[in-house]
Structure formats: structure tokens, C-alpha cells
Length: 441
Ligand SMILES: NC(=O)c1ccc[n+]([C@@H]2O[C@H](COP(=O)([O-])OP(=O)(O)OC[C@H]3O[C@@H](n4cnc5c(N)ncnc54)[C@H](O)[C@@H]3O)[C@@H](O)[C@H]2O)c1
Picture 1 (spheres, protein in one colour):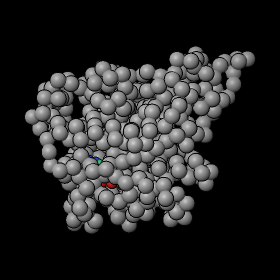
Picture 2 (cartoon, protein in one colour; picture 1 turned 30 degrees about the vertical axis):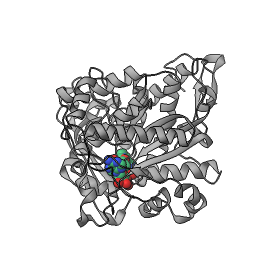
Picture 3 (cartoon, rainbow, N blue to C red; picture 1 turned 135 degrees about the vertical axis):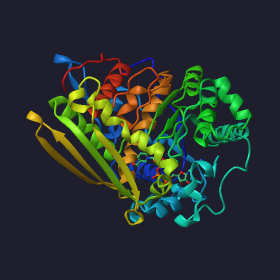
Picture 4 (cartoon, rainbow, N blue to C red; picture 1 turned 180 degrees about the horizontal axis):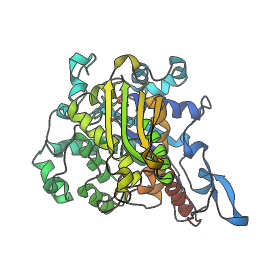
């Protein structure tokens, strides 16, 4: 075991921004797992084994035997939301889990009551649009204030949570709605000074709530994870702040369903040098996330996130004759009857020897939050590891878990699921005091 990583002693606070479908599935599953009532399926930190050492020294060990990971019993959850529902009420409302899978931890869930959100309806219009049904009543948000004052309120919330729960460390995790797309603005997003000046000038247009949470978290010594596709910590001001504070930042947009499949399929075509003419991806989903993404401004954020993976994997510039002319279309349709049980279809038009065309169809009947929860658990556990190991700034090694891996501006993201997994394992090897390697497992 590595010696220069601080031990995972004491309590780890996890402050979820958003207490909706994914958060409550994560929290309920974690509480059930620590009671021994459910198995954390899909979580590499809980179930995964990997090889360390080579040749005669080769061994397969659980991840937690290689690097010191927080024990599930030491995690304390808290949250902010614009709905007043506690975690039990929200889990019941979201209907991801059956009541019998929620009731055994009801008491603990009822204790998780959301703090008032830093919220701006302009960034999630459909969330407060009554034509979609339930709207927050009352709007459980901090009173209208400047961006700067919001940040001070959030910082106070984090300090109170840390103190009240006796947390040794706190990770702040955006698992809230997808915000509308905002292009990067160099003056506001280019430096900490510009960012703070814009907060004080209350520049609402360029500062969505997620950025205020991220700023508050980093100022309070907490790593920040972006689980949605929002432009948030992937701006120079946040790169600078996370480095200055010596804190990890990670994101963005959980790679849970369709994009996971795409990032596993695309490497097949590139490896076998099969051409791709078109890739049509469509989805139906009916949860609150689908409701928010139904708005074109919010869909734009998601579309950009979902659209980028295959072009990177196929290395269009290197193989123009195979991949330069791909018609890639991504659609998400809000369809309430399916709730959280998203269905996705992919039609891939490929071509082979002498340009002969072929087609592949993928129909994934998945469960959005069931796939996302173990990703969240691993992300927060590994981000805590990064914190204790002193890894500041963007955590590229966590790309395995996200659709649009964050990198610094001049670095190329890795989208291929298998390369991402190799990166993840090599970082764990290094942190565990082993050599990173390219050996086959
Ligand atoms: N489930 C998946 O597979 C998956 C994959 C990738 C990304 N995501 C992203 O994860 C996020 C959460 O998804 P979900 O299904 O739980 O959505 P959800 O709508 O059920 O929950 C989001 C919650 O965030 C709250 N919220 C919105 N703005 C807020 C703010 N400013 N402060 C505090 N709370 C706020 C909402 O009230 C809501 O309760 C979404 O952005 C989604 O796009 C999910």
C-alpha cells in the first residue's frame, strides 16, 4: 500500500447538489449495501479486482487493498434541492426503486433534508414549468441575491454541514439538472480574478448556479465533481482555482447508457478499420431529467456532450477515407410513460471491403439511475482518494466514468472505454506503489 496517501480516516461528507433520481438511487443503494441488504453491482471500488505486479509477482487484488478507500460506513450524505422533499420522499417520487428496496433505510433517508438551493430558473426552465406537472412548491431556493452572495451562503452551508456531521473531508457533487448551454466567455471564465469580478457584478448570464456551487466548494477545501454536461469546472478559472487550492475536480456527464455502448462499439470499427457512414442515436425517457432536457437550451448542453465521443475514438483526421464523412445525429425525446427506464436505439451504417455497406442496430432498454448510481459512488470515492493523495486539478484518470472527459484545453480527451479503463487502473497502480504498465490482464 502506498505511504504518501493520507489514510481514509474519519467521516467523508458527500454533498449532492440535487436530490433527484440519481442522487436518491445512489444514497439508498449505499445505505442498503452497508446494511448488507443489497450488492453494489456495477461499482469498481466495491466489487472490482485488478492485476498489480508483473510476471511472477502478478497478483489480483481488490481495489481497496491496493489504495486506501473510504469505507461506505464512513460516508455521510447531505444535499441541496429546489424541492423540499427529503431523500425518502424524493426516492418514492422518482420511482426508480421499488418501495421494498427503500423502506429498510427509510429513517436514514428521512434525515437527509435538502438545504435551500442556489437556483436560477433561467438555467432550467422546464423544471419550474407547470405544464409539465409537479413544480416545486414552495420554491426551496435561497432568496434572490447576487452571485457573490449566493457563493457566501453556499460556503456557510458547507461549513455547517462539515461541523454538524463531524466530517473530516467533504466532496461536493453536482447531480442536479442539466443547465442551459453557455459558451465560454474569456473575460468571465478565463481567470479567478475575472470570475470573482463577474460574481460581484452579478453577471447572471455567464454564471450559472453550478459554477457558484463549484466556486464555493473549492473555496471551502472540497473537491468538486460535475455529473451533468454543464459547462462548469471545465473553464480556466476553475482549473486555476483547483490548482491554487490543491483540490481535485472531475467530470463531466456520467457515461451510463447509450454513450457507454457507443464508446465500447466505436473502438471495434477503428481497430478493424471498418468505415462508418452514419450513426443515428435516439432515446426516449420520461423522468425529470428528460423534462428539463426537453427544452432546446438544455438539450444543447446534452447534445454537445453526447456527440463528441465517436469522432474522437475513430480519429477522423488519421483515417479520412473511413470516418471523415460520418452523419452523426443524437436525439432525446421526453416520453413520460417510461419514467427512468430509458430506451435507446442506435443505427450504425458501416462499410467494409470494397465499400460494401452493413448495418448494426442496438436497442438498449436500460434504467438510467441504476446505471448512474455505481458511477457516482466510484467517482466520489476516487475523488476522495485523489484529495488524500494530493492530486490537484483535472482528474483525467476518471474519464472512464464520463461522457465528455475533462482535460486541460490543450490536451486530447480519451473516450475509448477500454483505454479509459487502462488509464484508471494504471493510476491506481501508481497510487498503490506499483508500476504503471501496458501488460495484458
Ligand atoms: N441517469 C443517468 O444515467 C445520467 C447520465 C448522465 C448524466 N446524468 C445527469 O445527472 C443529473 C441528475 O439526473 P436525475 O435523473 O437525478 O435528474 P432529476 O431531475 O431527478 O434530479 C435533479 C435534481 O436537481 C435539482 N436541481 C436543479 N437545479 C438545482 C440547483 N441549482 N440546486 C440544487 N438542486 C437543483 C432538481 O430539483 C432535481 O430534484 C442530470 O443533469 C442528468 O443529465 C444522468
